[in-house]
Length: 386
Image (cartoon, rainbow, N blue to C red; front, side, top):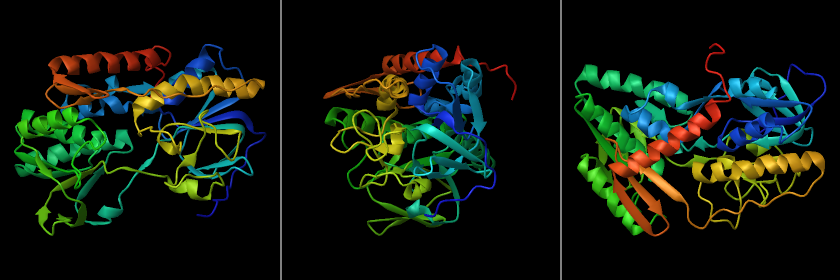
């Protein structure tokens, strides 16, 4: 991929540029607001003023939340922290020139760079699909498209919806979609394409068994095959085909296109290779966290859980880098808590080899999610104007 050349050039570079409003960067903004991270110029770049919290997306799709309950006001946070906010998308990065090009062709320079942009959704299998394809990213667009799909299914008297993805996101979206359609009296059938290994590979047997029961409870058809979307149908690896009215893609993470020409050392999977301090192994003035990076030798799954825990460490390391102090290692826990939403205000929990489920698990998840939104919303400002 070639470096896109800018047509608009600003003055001097900003001391610190944050690209993306992901989980970890929220803690960086909080540290700036609390004067724990001090720099003379900071810029936050994000495609949208609103950062939708991925942990609440299944609840939003299931009808448990309104969109205003699931998002954080990045522009409000930036204004409170006294930093510049640019509502644009990064399209090109040149780490040798320390230059970012945005989608309006503006160039932004930097001295220190932190990337928390997330990943892209892998869609190679759906290039020949001619029906409605809903990619889970970006989350705000997905939520809008989901509402449009529901309206169409209701108008048509039902239909077939396939969710492609064997991870927690695919499972949660299949359960949320089935729950929402049933609650609204829409006679639509939901299927989950989960590959030959089945859903939630890497989780304990107890978690997988409980989730399979939840899928069965909501009459979700489980297809243990690989799929390729063609025309208005899915062609499965066993040779069979199934016609679908829409496909929801939660099919794994791919590296963003702009990474290929950025000049950073990448891991084998195409993501930014970082060390235990979330620092690029090739460019020490670049940090990356969340789905945009890989840490070879670490058992980290691509999950918001790890991004949240890495956030405070990232904030400390940015502050240490700016002041010439020693950086801190991010040590992920061996076991982390996963709470998997199952529709109808039910959830399955995972803690290492342990598993549990019920409405009480959903209430626990609901409290955690609402507390996370509240922590960063109290420093933002929903009334600053749209």
